[in-house]
Length: 136
Image (tube, rainbow, N blue to C red):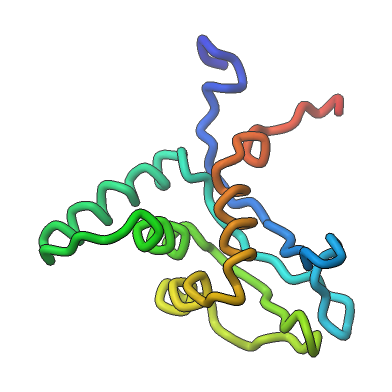
């Protein structure tokens, strides 16, 4: 353990963000009862920080000046490791493969903005990535 205890950890791995219906504050579920989720890595992990540098280099090479929201969507799409998406109205499972391109499209959807926020906040919350004590 490092100088700062468990805060010195590697913060690697992925966290599963349960997608909530903001009208009910309940998880969005498919007809078969499977919860909708997005799995993401920690934004401040070594891999997450490397994405910041990669995106900055790529966009500069292309001469692009993106808004902060556009940069955040690009980063979140690249931090996404998996998902199970469910239509919140019909409760049908959405059979969309998780790719960076699909994730960018999903997180840019106006009606999926709340899912972007839920996932973005969770990807920045250290408590989702600190290993729990075996005593808890």
